[in-house]
Structures are given as structure tokens and as C-alpha cells.
Image (cartoon, rainbow, N blue to C red):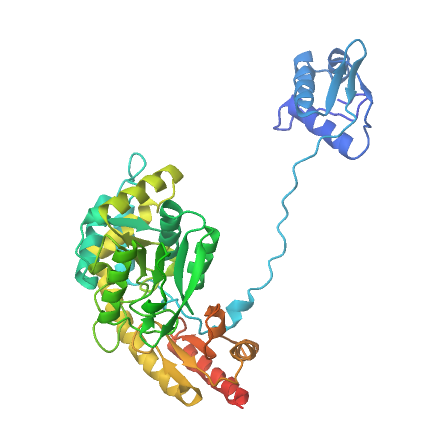
Length: 457
């Protein structure tokens, strides 16, 4: 049935009649068949034309009036509005460009090797999670109590930190833990020291929280404690394997740093990002072992299992953990139950320890090969631990240009200049040997040596 308006009724359609009318009316206004100011028939007349009940046309008019398409004028009737309401934008999927990175071999640092298929321990942990019912309500903002207890045992055993579950807070990884800490305990304008060269995400986090940053130099052993100033409220440090140069902060300098923190009241933020992987001797005990009141320890699964897990832990004094958990409860920002339950299963099963042992063997061989291939092109530092080495280049080599040339040849590598801010130092390349398969690592190093050979003066 059709009316004097561009409206029809289809009783075989699944859509209710009044919604059919409203939908057709909107389309007629948008395509110009109905103009602003057009007088509409009464609901009674329209119902008669369409052979429907008046309740149908009234419902359609009510809907259109609520949306602003029509208006009633006292004593005159109903009209199309002068201003057509803005319609919701139609979200169109833009053609997705091909991922250029996917075609490149990567030597960027910080990502472990991920096997193409999951192993038995990984599958076993997730099967265990699948048999459990989730919590009935919101879980503990500090993390699952059983997981916190397991992590306390883990960091006590492998990092020498004497702590209990009350000292542990589960995080979404190192950067998440750092940002939470800064948001809850620092104020805009507070000063924080960060190693230079150093971890860029820590710099970004400090800037986002409007902190004033002091760039502190490093040497072959790590942070130069003597450059710290008394007005600092926090120091971000990577003592186990300085990022990216790889120095290991010696015991004497660790003691000096803790004494300085006690004297000034400053907070030490220890990023323990890859201490599991050492190839000469066992790692030194964590800085947090010396003073859990002055040190906050950040750990992560990003280097042992996968950065995609977005899971880690923060170890601190009980008062600090309580403060952070309260802050996070208000924000509603903590890891989901399935991820925490899976990590708990991996810890109880010994899978995390197995993954570390397996990785240590794999990466030790790759490190040896990487160092032997690149030794003729510069001085290698940081090779005793972690998932990367740093190749220091001659002063007259432009590491940014080397990285660009390597990328053009199919290999992604990080120039050391990317990690520097104000402290001057030699150029270099930060080379991760963990991510690619062993054959791809050999290919990437072959390409890189060809690029380095052409860049030498």
C-alpha cells in the first residue's frame, strides 16, 4: 500500500510497520524527496491512505519527532524540520595496507623467540584455566592471592628478594607497573633520574606524568650514582643488565645507590626486565633485596614467554602495595582473571622455569654466533646477559644511516642513537638475537654485515 508520501507498507517484511515508515521517511529526507518545511498529512489521514491503524502512523511520527526529523506547529500541523539531524557516520573499513614489517627480518631487541606451535606446558596451563569457574565478583585489585603467593616464592628463589604475598602486586607488564607507580606516588614537577642511554618507554611514562627528567650517564658497569642530585624523588634504573648497553651494576655501586636513596628519601625503581638470561655467572641478587622500603622491583614475562601476555609483577613494601592496589581499584585497571590463572598454573607446574632454562640454552648459542659475526665491525658490549648485544661503531659512522640501509636491505635493527637523549656517546647498533628463527638470524646477520662493510670509512 502506498500513500501521497514516498512511503509503502510491506506486511511480509520482518520489520514492524511503524519502523518501516520511519526508515523510509528518513531516506526520503536525505535524498531530497522530502524538503524542509514540507507539511505532512495527519496521522489519521496517513493511516487511512496506507490502510493501517492510526497507532502505527502515530508511533512512526513519535519516533521521527523524538529524533528531530519532524516538528509540530500549533494550529498548523506537522512539518519536516528546517535542519536535518546529523546522521551517525557510517564506519567504512579502509583497505588495510600490507604490513611492511612482516616481510622484514628483525634484529630489534626485547622480544623472545616464539615457537610456531605452542608446547605441551603452555597448552596444559590453559586447559587447567578452562576447567575453572571465574570469580563471582571483581577479583582482588592487587592480583589473585594464590598468584601473589606463588610470585613471592618465585622472586625469592630466583632473585633473592625476601618477601611475602603482601609485597607483590600483579601488573600488565613493566611499563604498566611503572605508570601505575608514577600516577599513584609522584606529582607533576617531581624530578626523576633515568639512565641515558636508556629505556625510551620509561622516558615517555615520566613525561606523560609531567615529571622533570634528569638524564644520568652510564658506563660499562651501569648507572653513574655520583651524578644523582639530592632534589630527585625517584630514580629509574636497570641494574641487572643496563638497557641498552648491558652493564651490570656492581655490588659496591648498588650499596652506594641504596645509601643515597636512604639519605635523600628518593624512591628507586628497579626494572629487572631480563635478569633470567645470564651466560657467564648467576645474576646478582636484585636491588630490592637490599632495601624493600626504598626499592620498587618490576618484573615481567615479556622476555621469558611473550610480550603479548601483558603480564608482570611489582614487588615493594606492604604499604606501597596497599597504596597502589587502592589507587588501581578506583581506576578498575588490573589484569584479567584468565591471564593470572594461567600464570599461576605455569608457576605451580614449573613451566616458567622450564621456559627460562630452554631459552637460556637457545640464546647462549645465538649470542655466541652473533658476537663472532659482528666482532670485526666494532666493539661489542652487554654480551654477558639478556636478549641483545650492543655493537659500538667508530665515531665517524652514522648509526641512523646504517639502520636505514639495513632496513632497505630487508633487516630491522635499532640504532643506539634512538636511546640517547642528552648524554653524548659513540654510535652503535642494539641488536636483538632472540626473535627470529635460527636460520633467519643467520640471514639477517649476513645482510647486516654487508651493510656494515659498505658503511665503514
